[in-house]
Structures are given as structure tokens and as C-alpha cells.
Image 1 (cartoon, helix red, strand yellow):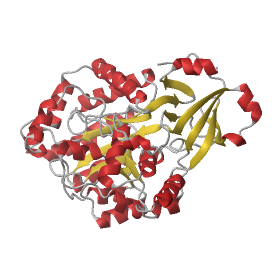
Image 2 (cartoon, helix red, strand yellow):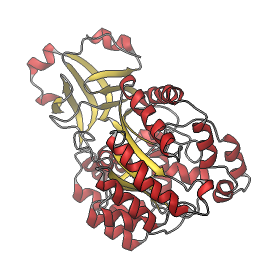
Image 3 (cartoon, one colour):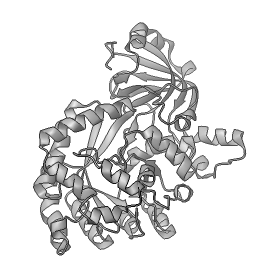
Image 4 (spheres, one colour):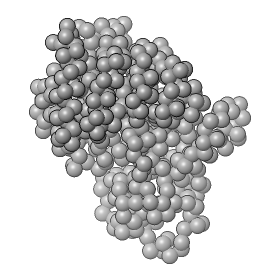
Length: 439
């Protein structure tokens, strides 16, 4: 809900303020599982924990971040002061397919009874099913649906949302999806970042002439998307059943030539050489990485490619292999987490649940998981104005009703988000009365 409180000067006094100004030495140190005190100290250094902290918001950027005792008493007396539990940078969902139509709930049941993802895809289901639903939908309907999903994401703590196309697979339909994102953007309480994913899968009509489709992506789709300013990023699904490493590199380099930042769906179902492509082209991120090789991890670290891990896909597809989060962190690769919100393999918008899965599936600590949906997720989108709490950064904040931040992944489904501040304005609060009482 919206608050009617004045927004000229707001101070949040937090029991725990998590700045995400990570201590790199602590991050590279293996978590001491059998020494709770040492583990707590390591996590505190990773998330930049300030006990009894404060943030001062006046306008779109942060004016003060630090200990409550260090905040100027004049600011305290002249501001609306609200006491809260835990404050983090605004959560960034850096890999989603949020602009889609239709449902694939029947495939969910099929897979649970033993059907395989690629068998469903090759029979005309999977991505092809959603493509058909999107083609039957108008741009305004897609935009309206996306707006509703964005409001739900706001309630779940998200302040920045990446949104991919990829369910059009023709020039006009891909442009329709991206225009739906642009139409939704002014109506939502978050920042949308569109990605062109025309190379999501080879359309069935091009099965016997896939090079023709690759050339259409390169020579027609990318130039038109770029000249219309409809996307910031270019993505490719490089894996078994999708595009080869050579095809992916050609498409991403074409995107670079037209000013689009490269990203890649990498090595989800097999070792396809996709992470190596990410390093070779200097991609912002390589996403999935269940089958990434040690050599590719080293190459990603050298090229500063962010690893975006998507554990909901493991849950939905029951993949036998998990992305090697601990190996990536130990190698110095920034690890981000995201929902991969899509109708087939990740039907959730809940980053809190993703944190739980990251802790249980990947062996990540709560601080590492929070870092992965704030600072590192912003880095996956090459956004350096958010993801950490520091003076001058965007005033994007997620406020959590918890006694301790370790509770967030511990209690999945609880929905601990009590409020969201986006660009200095209150976008969501669970109790407007509390704000009004403090005004």
C-alpha cells in the first residue's frame, strides 16, 4: 500500500543495517561450519553489518548510512524516524522472463511423473508452448499482466527487475514483447531493465535451416531492437536443444556491435562451452552454470563475468547436478541469485525462497545469499548505482520484519518484507498507520 507520509526527510533506524559493503577477504575464506561464532563474524563482514544502524533518505539518493549514534541530532529531530528490524539494499531480480502469457502447469505434472524437459520441448511444448500463447496476446495485454507481476515483486522486496523477451521468435513478436516492457515501465514501482532474447530456442519451422534463423537474429532482429532502444542487453540460450557456442558467440558479438551488453544462458543441461563464450566476449553474466567446467570458472573470474545461479530450475526440473557455488566463490567470481521467473521451469517471484534454496542446495551462507540478490545482482546488470548502501547511492531499500537476517532463508514462505523504498519514495509498507504515527 502507499503511505501519505511526507517524503522530504526520512530516517530508518534499523536493528540490523546490512550495507553489503563486502569484505573480500572474508568472502574468499571458506565458511567455518563448526565454529558458530566465527561463522557469524564472517557473515557480518560479508554483509557489512551495522548493529543499530541508520539511513537518511532525502530525495532519490542516500544522504547518510552508518551507526544511529553517528547521525546528526538535527537530522533526527527534523526527519520522520521509523524504527525497523533489518534494512538491506533493494533486492535485484537480475534474470527473469516476466513478460509472458499462458500457463504450463500441465508440463509441471508431466515432469514430476518422469517426462523429460527436452522431450516436452521437442514435442512442441516447453518454450514453444509459451511462444504460441504470446503470439495470441496483444501488446497491451502483455503489459497489463507484467504490471501486475511487478506489483507482486515489489511486495516481495524487489526494486530492480530484469525482463527478457524470447517468447516471440519473430522480429515483430520479439519487438512486441519488448514494447510491452516499455509500456509497463512508467506504471510500476521499480526499475525495469529489458533484455533481447530472440535466440531463446530455434523455432520449429527453422529446425532444418537453423542458420537462417541465426542470421535473422543477427541481421534483422538485433539492429531493429537496438535502433528503437528497446533493450539494454542481448542474451542467448547456449545449451543442448538451443544454440551452439559458435552460434551464441556470433549473436552476442552482433549485439555488442549494436551497443547491447552481452549475457548468456550457460551450461544448464550440459557442458556446452557457454561459460567460455561469456569470458571470451566479456559478458556481464553467465547464468545457470550447472555444468560449468573448472577451466571456465577460472576464465570467468579473469574476465569479471558474474555467475547468476537459478536454483528454482533445479527444483522444477529435478536436475541431478547443482551449480558449483562454493567453487565459484572460492575462485573470486561474483555469485548472484535470481528467480528465473518463467512459466515452465521457475514459476516464482520470491527471492526469499531463492535464498533458502541457495543455502540448502549450494551451501551458501545467509550473508552470501543476500549479497547475491543485492550487490552481485546489480553487478550482473552492470548497475553501479545500487546494490550497496552508501552515501550517494540510489535510495533503494528493502525493509524486513525479522529479529536477525539469518531468519530470512530459514523461514521460507513467511514473506518477511515489511517495506520497500524505491528512489527515495515509499513504494510499499505493510502498515501505513505506523508511518503516519511517526510522521
